[in-house]
Length: 130
Image (tube, rainbow, N blue to C red; front, side, top):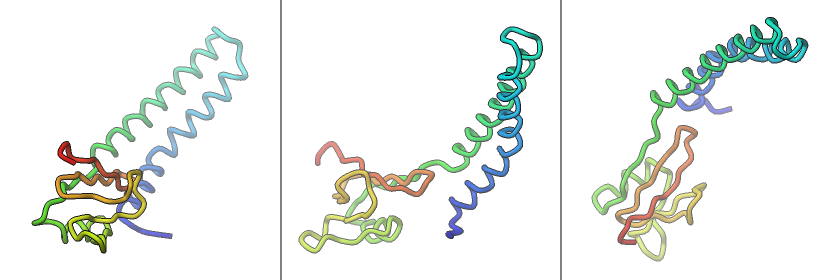
């Protein structure tokens, strides 16, 4: 099991939303046991909605605290970006950075933007001139 900062941050988020998630689940079960439009049903729905709002805010806060990172590949920062994303120069063209585990073709060229999301996954956004 890895203990990267992202994994640790996600684990902290999971602990933070554990209680409101349990409240939400209880509220859903309670609402299912009551008659629609009854005061008990409305109270259960209100509790469930309040718990969802707490979860939503926790996730929004987490996303704000752990924004995606991005770097634009240039000749000057090639080695730094390669180290950051675990990439390596292509054998055929040392201006091309090969990156494993991307949603794109896996190669970035000068001017391309490499993004790492909050899960640590990399994607490549092609520059307009590519």
